[in-house]
Length: 102
Length: 102
DNA sequence: TTTTTATTTGCATATTTGTGCAAATGTGTA
DNA sequence: TACACATTTGCACAAATATGCAAATAAAAA
Image (tube, rainbow over all chains, first blue to last red; front, top):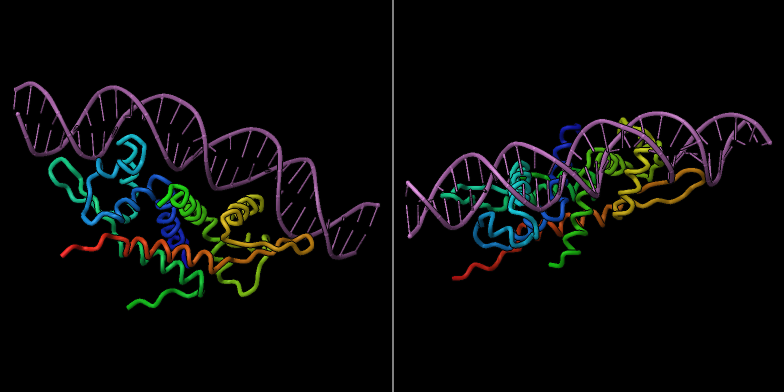
């Protein structure tokens, strides 16, 4: 496995591996519809600027997506990507072989 | 979901989300038999003391287990625990959304 | 015993990271 | 226009983190 592949997965896990960021992901996870940042703020007791920065990190890692709507940014969770990435790692760790892709 | 549950998963992901630590996990993953720390050193170009500390973090998170054997510490990957934790998160992220109302 | 090997720990340090506040930016509304 | 709202950015700072080196510890080998 290439170093850059390891780094990519490490970056994804690191992005998820922070309390407030993971809380944001859970919050988005429970939402039926995409949410703006102010709504997401409710799950963490931090400043809005902090939420903004965390959301930026999550977006950079492809964990969430955003759509501009007026003065709001509407965020949605990239469920498939995150779930597949985690399962791929899980299968590798358990069986030492990558998942078969369709 | 309780804060402490979120924190626990975040801690696990954070432990995995560092390049050298993830490299150690991959190295252990490919080993049919448990390995000592010096052998594991080969996958990262860092000091043995750094590897020691990373292994300590992985052990604290339950990712690896160690057995003392003479002057060596024999490490093995806790495959089931890590894989199940990752899959649990993957399933939650993929499926935990309110049922769509008709 | 002394020496070698494996690992951990103490210390110092450079870097990263999470955070809050205030200001700036962008955009809808009165 | 002026104002309100949503979000980002600049700045400062404290805390966490990763790292290397040297010393300490532990145990096998000589």
